[in-house]
Image (cartoon, rainbow, N blue to C red; front, side, top):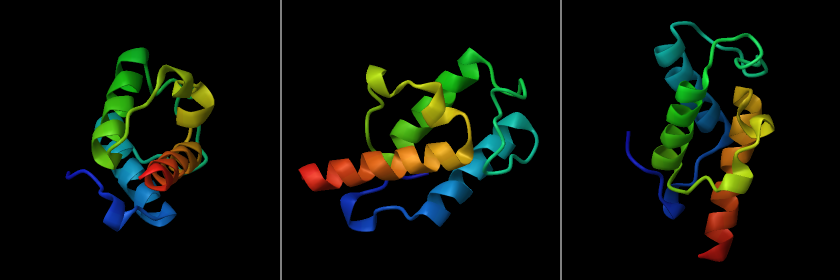
Length: 94
C-alpha cells in the first residue's frame, strides 16, 4: 500500500475498511469495528507492533510513545478515530 498524502486525507470509511482488511489478513478472521481483538486474545505484543508499523507506513505519521495507549489500538473504531485525529493534526501543522 502507498502512504497517504495531505492532498488525499483518508475518510473514516476508508480507514475502517483498510484496518479491517489488514486485521483479517493477519488474524485469519474478520473483526467487527467494535470488537476488542486484544481482549479476545487474537493479538499478541509482537502483532501489536506490526499494527503500529502498518498504521505509521499507511497513513504517513509517527506513533509517539505517548500514543501507545491500548485504548487507541484495541478496536477498529478506536484506531480509526486515532488515525483521523493524527492525520488532521499533521495537516493542521503543515
